[in-house]
Image (tube, rainbow, N blue to C red; front, side, top):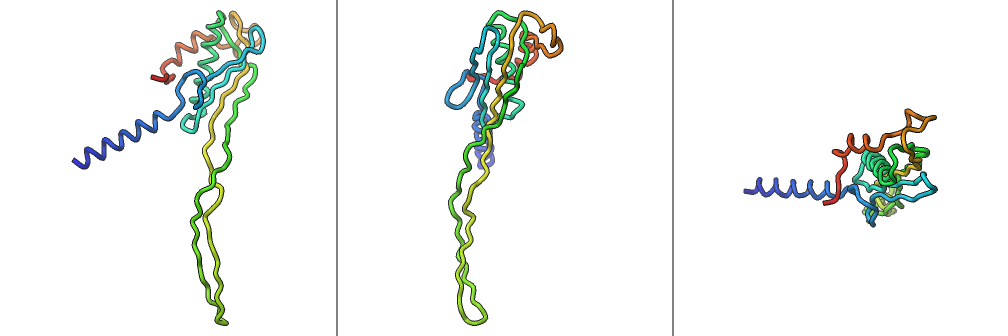
Length: 166
């Protein structure tokens, strides 16, 4: 009975942790995608993940949104003009002090107290943020044919990788 309970608790923990990653959705307080139109066929598209999203996952979601947006605009292809992706590193967090007081006696009979502490800044995980400037067009770009992405083809090939909010 204890082993069944232990298995249930472990599975529940795994499911809870997997549910913490940002899913593919419009931007809210915990992340997602957003887009900003810069001119007629040029957009800045962003996807903000959190510490539970890999950089590859964020880039896939970002490119998927670029493809969706291209189709929404009635166009078929997009070209990534600029990749302004980065990792957002929050301020370091301080842990609680773990103080150890030591007393040393010298050979002359005097005592000396010293304090050791593990208090200090701790590393924190970063949040990947993908940001592309894209230019959309009807058909491949004649100058950059190999860099033009077919939006419909990208969506069909990668739809299985997109985790949506339930």
